[in-house]
Image 1 (cartoon, rainbow, N blue to C red):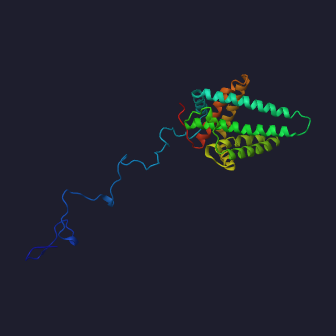
Image 2: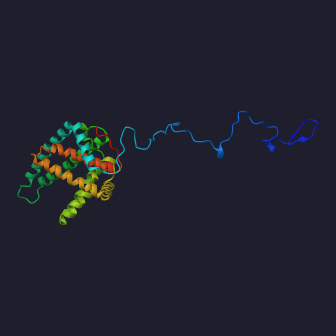
Length: 275
């Protein structure tokens, strides 16, 4: 109601709040949005929070494919190797020479007439340690390739999580050895299931047992694609070995990078562009 001086109260004007008489709405025809809230800003109005990226991962890196493509894995391995062949070949040659010399020396100790002499034990121990270091070095180099960092010769010797890597290697050796004693086939199955143990230990700094679990889960869930990859890897390296071992300087790194590509793809890890 409104009132005039000296006159009776008048009914409210149309649209006027009876409880708030005397208030005049601001001009311009502004109206509250339906539902009592304002619409969200359009796309691109605000940047994403710090440290977060849009779907697809970190900009500049292709998201890992949902499924493993054997041809893509081998092509990826070849392209990465081709772009950094000198360092891969140099490291492989040095490895073959050093491992060959130490292995020959260790075998020489076993020709002693004693059953188990101290030199033979030390030689076998050194060979085992060197074997783990070589596997870790090659795995580190392949992971660097997947990260988009071409490994230099020195990068192969950048080991991490080494204690757990050794423990994992020992556990894998024990498991597979027991498997091969049990009519070979269990050993082959164990070798396949534990294929990526070192990759998990090095790439994700996992404990030995967690790395074994990670490899088991990955391979057991992707038996078909990984079994086919394993067969191709074996065949290619056999062909490389038949070429006076020189072919292994190519097939070895290529298949290793391809296998590491499979590991990253199937575990949802980072995959840098092939070229």
